[in-house]
Image (cartoon, rainbow, N blue to C red; front, side):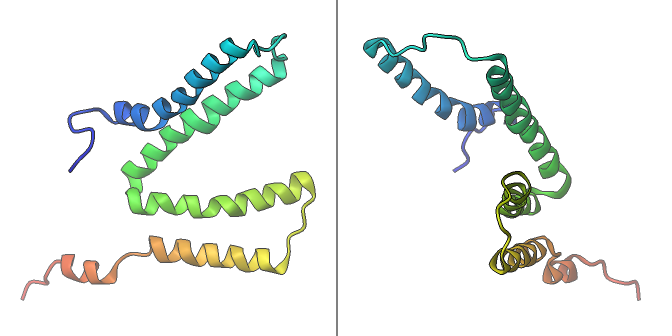
Length: 136
């Protein structure tokens, strides 16, 4: 069964990614209006700017790049980028927070890279089947 038949990719992404995030907001607004817990001041400009940058760069731009990658290299190879996320987080933690990088971290990086190589390698069996026959 195919979900979202006849819908555009944007509509499907909206329904899968945006709508579930709106439901908790609605419940929180209802809770705040019943308890009187609304903030007493407006957040500072750096806070508002951070939220906008997270929304635009880390969400909207990421989806555009994701769809471009799916169109260019296919969905299976595109998912390999998610395997690299822990490595990026560890490196950022080491640079920003001075967290240590241990031998186990390096072993983990190697395993991640091996996994990416295995996922993105061409399927030789499929290449043999699809290879054109040489004229005789």
